[in-house]
Length: 78
Length: 133
Image 1: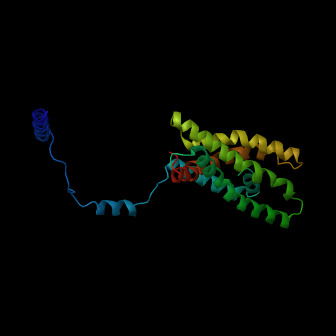
Image 2 (image 1 turned 60 degrees about the vertical axis):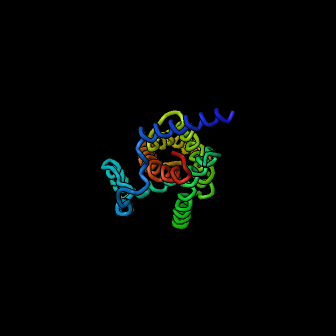
Image 3 (image 1 turned 180 degrees about the vertical axis):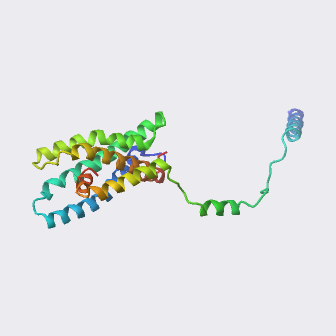
C-alpha cells in the first residue's frame, strides 16, 4: 500500500514536470501601465450619433419650428 | 442580476414615458390655461395610463425577443408607433376630441422618428443599466 502511494506520488511529479515544461508560466506582472489607456477611455465621449440620427434630429427640430401646434399631439403619444 | 429579467425590462420601459408625462402634463396644463377648450381631463388619460404600460410591455417583448435573436432596439421601438397611434386616435375619438386632419399624416411620421430615437438611445441606455443586453 505504501509502495503504491509512493509510485503515485512519483507519477504526479512526472506529470507536473511535463505540464510545466509544456505550458509557460503565467504572467504575474502587467506588461504595461493600463491607467493611461483607462484615462483616455474615460475622457473620450461615450457615444457618437451617426449622421442619419443627426438628420432625424434636425428634421424633428425643423418640424417643431414649422408646426409648433403639433407638439401637443406628439406629447399625447409619448 | 440574472433574476426577474422581465420585471427589469418592464421597469426600464416604463421609465421614459413616465418622465415625458411630466412634460406633457405641463404642456397640456399650459394649453388649457391659454385656451380653455382643451379637454385636459380627457386628453390626459391616454398618455398617463396606456402609454407607459405599452412601453413597459414592449420592452418586455424586446427582452424576450433578444434572448432568441439580436434585433435593433430603435426599429423595435419605432414599430410600437404602429400600435400606439391608431389606439391613440381611437381613444381621442371615443372621448370626444378630434385632431386636425393633416396631423393624421404628419403626426405618426414624427412619432416614428421620436420613438426610434428614444428607444435607440434612452431605453437602450436604461436596458444596459438594468443589465438587459
